[in-house]
Amino acid sequence: MRTLCVFCGSRGGNRPVYAEAARQVGTAMVARGLDLVYGGGHVGLMGVVADAVLQAGGRAVGVIVQSLVDRELAHAGLTELHVVETMHQRKALMAERADAFMAIPGGYGTGDELFEILTWAQLGFHTHPIGLLNTAGYFDPLLAWLDHMVREDFLRPRHRNLLLVADDPERLFDRLQEFKPGPAEAKWTQKT
Image (cartoon, rainbow, N blue to C red):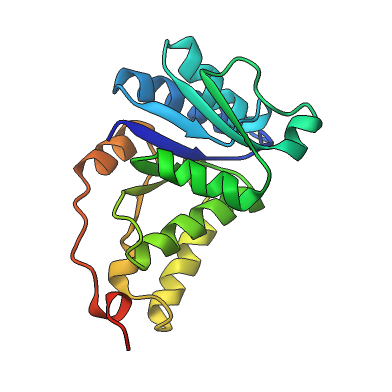
């Protein structure tokens, strides 16, 4: 694991604990020798993570759509900034550049990115670890919904377990580094 893609909010939330956790993520990444790839913004938790990585001497690679550059939301101090035309291109390039994924608090965009990368793992399109930093219980309702999916037989337990969860950045990094993908399921790999 050399490059971590972090999905997170373009807003900071209404509690300081979210920004503090984002700073811890960025600092811990550099201490573990990990490069950052993310959505390329300078605002919200996105900017906090990128700034923490850069301040610790690490590499921060952003991928952003032109329309957000036009709104002056791009981070000007990144190691690399890739400008693409569509959100689909943005997510594909971030995924291509990453060895692992992590979501920290955010809104619709964070949820979209997280669920797309989980779906790709479920379908066997990649075998990279996917983590969720549950800062101050932010994702508790989401985790309850995933467990409900399993109980109602819309999600298999092994696919539920694709999402590695911790409330502490260091513990989550350990889980990501220890991750071993299981064998692909025939349902997702055989033609019918």
